Length: 153
Image 1 (tube, rainbow, N blue to C red):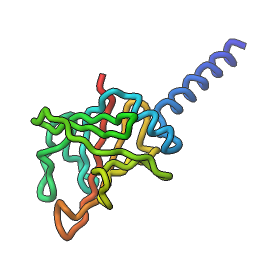
Image 2 (image 1 turned 30 degrees about the horizontal axis):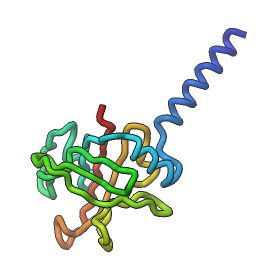
Image 3 (image 1 turned 180 degrees about the vertical axis):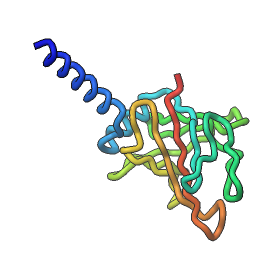
Image 4 (image 1 turned 90 degrees about the vertical axis):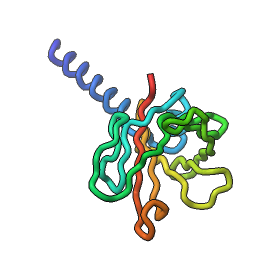
C-alpha cells in the first residue's frame, strides 16, 4: 500500500514537472505565457545553429556573422506592443506582436516579411525562443538567428 502511494506520488510529480516545462500547445497559450511575464532577459543567441551569446557574454566564433547589438530585455504587452531595450541604450524600441494561426510574430507595424517568429512549442514557463532567417546579415546567404530569453526575476 505504501509503495503504491509512493509510486503514484512520484508519477504525479513527474507529470507536473513535464507539463510545467513543456512548450505551449497553441498560439493562444503561448501568448498567455509571454504576456504573463513582466520582463524577459536574453540568455542565448544562436547564429546558424552556433552559439554566439551565453549568459550575457559573447562567445568567440571564427568567421560568420556576429551580433554586437541586441535587445537585452523584452516585454510582450497585452495590447500587442513588443518593447525591447538594446544593450547600451536605455530608450525602449517598440514593435508589434500578433498571434497567427501557427505562431506569434514580432515585426514593425505594417512590415511585410522579415518578422521574428515565436513558435508555441518554444514557449514554456519561464523561457521562450524567437527566430528569423534573413539575407540582410550576410548577403546573398541566408542567416538563421535564434534568440533565447528567460523570465527575469
